[in-house]
Length: 360
Image 1 (cartoon, rainbow, N blue to C red):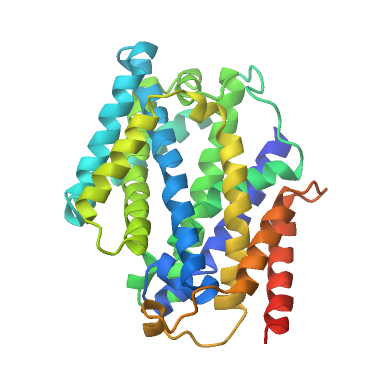
Image 2 (spheres, helix red, strand yellow):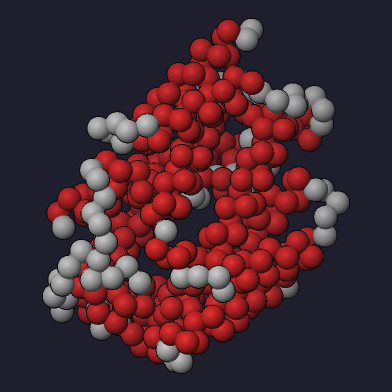
């Protein structure tokens, strides 16, 4: 238990720092993340990144729908109703996003304070009545690979480093806000997840909520949390598709993305069982990208021609960056006593520096 909580704390802080360190660049450039990435990877390289974002978000949307369905089925309808819940909640989130930013804003204004209140009540009950720990619920993560899992979740937000910060006036204050929001919530609720899994002997969110005695409040909290997260996932996918196909209709894209995510939730509950594998896959793809973005926007003082990012003046491909990305991804999955995250960052930045000099 001690080791698990240490990994949660260290991984949450490290992953939050990696995302927050890029926020000032988002505020400075004033463009979406997939556009800013063109300054590092070139237009084709950034398009590949957008395609990865587009495809992996289907898994996130389906996963969130399955989590919400599991929680709702625990209270209303049982396991047999989960597929209906998954589709219904998936389409509800899609409809809100399709209605536009104003609708999403109003939904968040209601959902976020309500989630904050429920979370505070649940944490208070947990402190007053700690659960009996029945078992691990899953095989323990192997040392630093557990650290990689936690960081993998945090860096899943990496490709939003500029999407919202581009509207802020002060990049440094934005970085602090992003760091605190990601680190504090991750530490608090991943720790609760560890306790819930141990108490339930299961990694199913509904089982965890029941074991903690949180059924009546836990199910609405999980449902709202996954719905509002899918607002962001659908938006990110639509933006990624727009960068690939500028003429695409935004509303049509939103409905296609949300519909596919809802349909994928019907296939299996394996989205829950393979969650750790998905986090490692995201970590292997995105940690090296984080290293590249850090090298370009935080460690380098070279200016960025923002206008050129939208024209052919930006190179189609940046071979040094692509080589560093590939090397960093390979390093992430190599067995190492200190895990993949640190290895990947070091290798990515080093290869990029060497390849950039060799290409001059």
